[in-house]
Image (cartoon, rainbow, N blue to C red):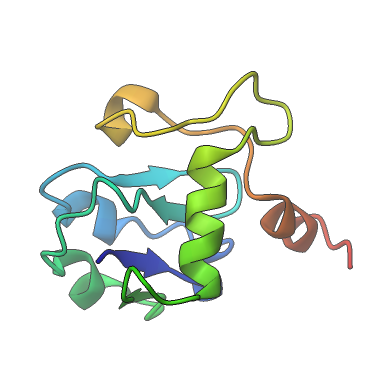
Length: 112
């Protein structure tokens, strides 16, 4: 199934993965980047260029926390948003998302 981005990406502003993604499925949010699991084609281009080694492949059937959170990020209404992001088929047309997963927002705001 898809690649996911994990916590080492939080507050990292490097976007080498965005530049190499051939399907534009890596979205920028307030505190980190997210791969849209339904749009990822599993090419792996992003994994090799991540300077903080935050990207890895996960099985779609696993109970991986990063995959669960990615699905929540795209499928639920984020704080301050009117509706879920869903699968817009292109991060460039969406632009920077001015919210994030609630757990990530707590981390970047220093709230436990």
